[in-house]
Length: 181
Image (cartoon, rainbow, N blue to C red; front, side, top):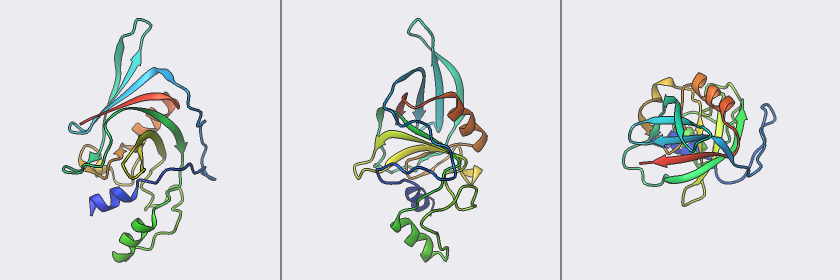
């Protein structure tokens, strides 16, 4: 069930502005102050800060929930942050809503911020990485802290809510993101 729920949290390409949250710029700029590196196998997100001498200094290491073992749809390699949203709504796909419905849970087309079924938590950080089917990958909060540090998602990276807030306030749109196996 964790895989099905995790896959449901991935949205398909296209921007959605959140009526209830603030949205940072979607401009395709490059922020070279920071870089993010995510290790799927280690369940770790490292935040690096660049100094003026082309060196990266580890600023912070976070535990993250990552893709379930055996999942082969997640993208690897270099990308960037494309948007940062605070207090986001969740727009579950029709497929995801059907999966929930079979379990007796009726999801609305839009799950509002703060709702117990909102899998985005308080922040979602959209990445330029896409699956073969066009799904957007994200770093986001969660509604179940037990998922952090485990291989339980459909590809997105889930963080403790306080950690994702801190990360989102530190980085900006354009920050480089490297996803490693």
